[in-house]
Amino acid sequence: MASSPTKTSTLKKEKKDESFLEKVTTLGRRKKIKDLKEVNDLNQDGKISIDTPGSPVELTADNFILENGEERSMIEPDSRDDAKLKELIQVLMDWINEELKEQRVIVRDLEEDLHDGQILGNLIEKLAGIKLEVREVMQSEVFQKQKLQVVLDTVNKIMNLPRWNQQKWSVDGIHSKNLIAILHLLVALAFHFKAPIRIPEYVSAKVVVVQKKDNLLVTNRVTEDITTTNEAIGGRFERDAFDTLFDHAPDKLNVVKKSLISFANKHLNKINFEVSDLDSQFHDGVYFILLMGLLEGYYVPLYNYHVTPTVFEEKVHNVNFALDLMDDAGLPKAKARAEDVVNQDLKSTMRVLYNIFTKYKHLT
Image (cartoon, rainbow, N blue to C red; front, side, top):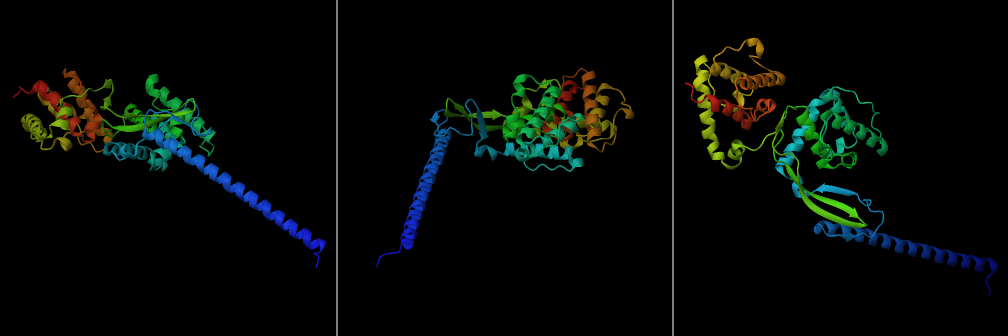
């Protein structure tokens, strides 16, 4: 029995539709496989470049994250677990949170929380006592970078840093959540504004630097120094005997401590004071002031310092006043910051006391 024209046309249409769907599906699968292959090839290129520092790798995609001439750096995973680096990050976060606590700002991740410029702007306004003329941060990357530009221009102007130092951070570096750039910036701010914190010394990180040159991905591994010795007004301190003592001869540390305590007590006992712990008993500056008065033979009026200091600022005032007395007596400039002494940094306290000991050790 012959098929009806209507039924025949319907079968042809279904077959045509099935053929079209099969073709489209097959093309889709082929395209997906091709895309996955390109992605895998690109991932393999990246892996090779990381595993083989300095070797060029030909890219298989034109829309790689880096433009020609651009470079990115990232901390190696092992370095992120370094105890000193973790300590530095925590110290800086605690400092920012303390400075901005009245604004109810809480920083939990330096890279995520600082990259858009909002909190950095708030910090600069608080530290410098200024008001930045910028809009509140929006989701737009353009506006975020505009704000970062204003913030960093202000920072560079306030600190009057040489150009080589300014190059340690940039708008692109901060916005791309480059931890090294963020740490360099925060450490510079902490030193400039005399932050009441102890910056860990000799913090470094292993960094992978990736650069795109003529459509080639070139990588290199470097060690980036984030902090060296702590700085004070007037310049950087060179390593001294106390660095060597703490780093390489901790067994002799107690011997030196006992000698300095014995020297201090020989004079402080004259006014019925006694020292047993260098870290805690000198950190408010009072014993330094009394000691200088005894050794130089004068009475220090009580209105010149805080006899029973309770807050950080009062203690810093006392230590700075004691350092001024030492300077007036002709002692060399102590290689320590008042803020570090107040924070009970033993090395800084011993440096100041040893400075006194060197001149007056023969006095009875």
